[in-house]
Length: 98
Image (tube, rainbow, N blue to C red; front, side, top):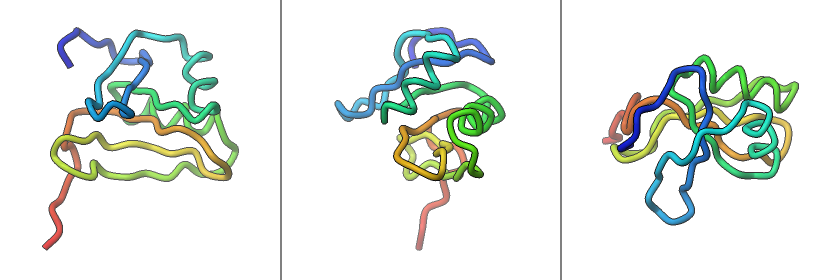
């Protein structure tokens, strides 16, 4: 993440290229629409990620730790097909499996 990010703000997130990079800042309403359209977004704080997931779907959000050291933890709105809401630092909450 080469840019300075602000807490309480949402950003586009590009994982399709394999870069897993945080993109441009977007409004919360745009972030909700992005997630509903199966696109991923990013925010610094887990509380913001969980809150956005609750606004996208009335079901309890699913939480996933980072799936590897180069990945981010995230929330996923339950009850349909949605994008991911990534947050925090790469590898945060990652625990290697034996």
